[in-house]
Image 1 (tube, rainbow, N blue to C red):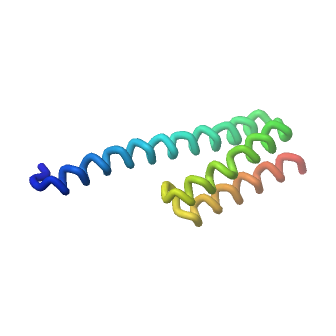
Image 2: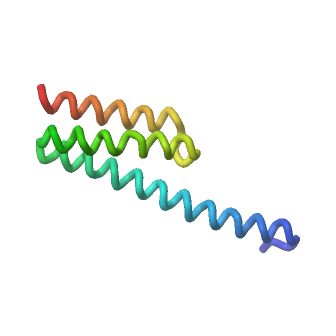
Length: 88
């Protein structure tokens, strides 16, 4: 348990940041899941629309430090690749 005042404050701050980051991560997963579902259904138009919505969300998470920049870029790239292959 934290003893000093500053340590207690740090614990409160960490709890707030954790809640915010958890919310952001959940939001990203929801957007990615929508792309996955559109891909599974074979609907290219819906997949493209979902990808357009998911891409900025992934990059925003990377910018905020929720995801690593390379991880977000990799996810966007792989989803885009799968959406492109759907039309071929």
